[in-house]
Every structure is written in C-alpha cells, then in structure tokens.
Image 1 (tube, rainbow, N blue to C red):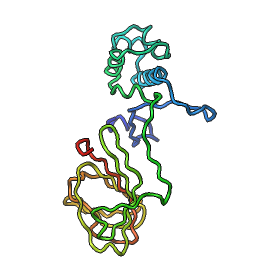
Image 2 (cartoon, one colour):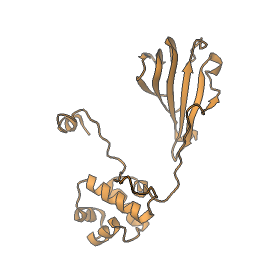
Image 3 (cartoon, rainbow, N blue to C red):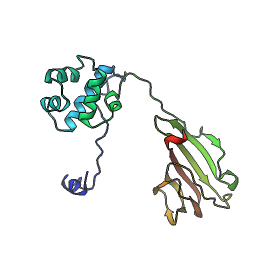
Image 4 (cartoon, rainbow, N blue to C red):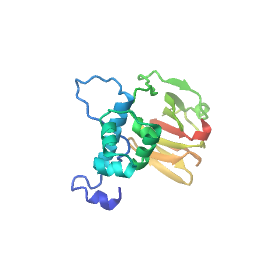
Length: 225
C-alpha cells in the first residue's frame, strides 16, 4: 500500500500499514479447534482471497478460465480441485499454491519454550561474557529461524563484532547499549529494535546501562540450511 493510499484510509488509520497476504477465518469461542479438511481449507482460502481482490464469483471464474458453477462448488467444498485448477486459482489470485492449502489437515512445526527453560548455548561471544539462552530454532521450507535471549553483564568486558549470512532482528528488553552495524552506531534503549543484514559487522560497542537483555532473531538463508 502506498503512502497516498494510507492517507486515504481515514483520520484514525492514516499511518497504519496493512499486509493482506495470507488468510484468516472467524471462529466462535465455542467452536472446536480441529484442523480443516483439504477441500474445506481450499474453499475458505479461495473465497477469502477472492473477496480481498474485490472480485465476484463470475469475474474470478472468467479470470481463471473455469465455469462459474465450478468455482462455486470449489468455494463451497463440494468438489476436489485438480492440480491444474489449483494452479490456475493461485495464478488468478496472485499467491503461491501453498496459500490455498493453509489450514488443511497437516502437521506444522512450532517451538514452545517455557520461561527459564531455554538451553544455554555457546556462541562466539560466550568467552567475552555474553550469555545466550536458546528460545527456539525452527527449520522452515526456505530458511532456518533462530531465536536467542542475550544477557550482557559487567563480565562482558570486550565486544566482538559478528558477521553471518541472513537477516538479524534485535529487540532490547532491559538496559542501554550502543550497537554497531557496518559504519553506523545506534543507541538502543528498552523497546528499541534493529533489523540488519547479518553480513555487515555488528555487535555492542559500549554497554551504557547494565544489565542488558535483548532478543536476537536470526533468519538464515536457504543456502545455509
């Protein structure tokens, strides 16, 4: 959405950024949390995405190259989609085919770590007094996500600069530090965040207020899986 489109969203939503990718469905609190069957998942996803695009059933059917009756059956989970039809729908809705399968009866990975139970791990900064608690590592289809809780104390006497493939996100929970990335130094306070290219040399260069605790989330690229 462009800045001009944002400004036209109304006085209370002028600065709100919206991402319409993906799907969502309403659920009453009393409704069980069972996973959807494949046909029902496709039906709900197609109908939701079509509505987001502002297309009628007829318009969508014409765009995809199938009959209106067939699209109606698909959206009402009354028929199974062939692979070719599923591909046409994905192209017509400008989404990956996997978006049409969201919510289907398939096991998806998640990582839960109760407070204080994360594994203590050794990283390049450990010998410098940096403490790392692993909050989860999830290997997805195209990348690996690693989440760390980092603590810096008076024992952290030197400040190594790190470099690694992928993108890193830092969110400060407590304390104040000067954090360097490439040729820029940022003063980070609680609530501040920094997202950066991991290939640029980065790390804390001055510990202003101790102790310092921050979350580090690294998304490693596909080549490093």
